[in-house]
Length: 204
Image (cartoon, rainbow, N blue to C red; front, side, top):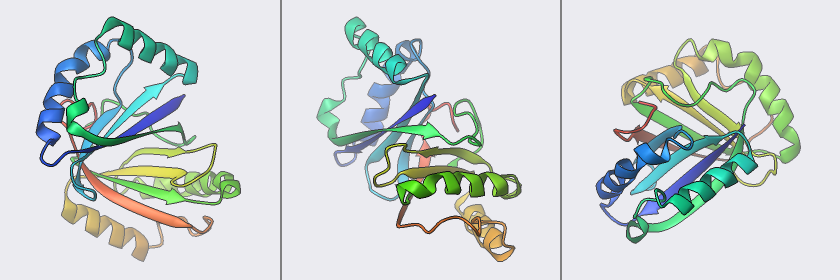
């Protein structure tokens, strides 16, 4: 299983129009393979949207994209709304929940970490050992890593019912030593953004 995380930087105030055009085309596209989730930034880079597509493999992704393009059902006609786009392929962590139909938000925090590539196995082990205790406070929405290394080679997403609960939970888990995992390797770089799901997103 692989997940493609696609990040689009849109022109000013174009998120509503982008969502409309994307949502209009999605039902036919989703017949080929499901959308995992779709969000827009609430805190972070303005006018940014994030889409996550799960695939069985790189070959499966290639086949689906070719079929969608040949049939004309995808991509949506949004090129005039987009300033730039980045597509990255990640592997779900062994302990990551399945992405898709879940009602666990509506606030999603996506955190992007860069570790030394050789540290990723240790990160996965330390996180897996502590995750059950952390999820007693709020659910993990997803967790991924890049087998190729590089920047942002470890990404995790958490869901919260509100901004206030996010602040409270993060403070309490730190105070009680629940999270972050104490034995995890050092982070080289970290970034974060808060996201809100689109109306058509399977994850709400």
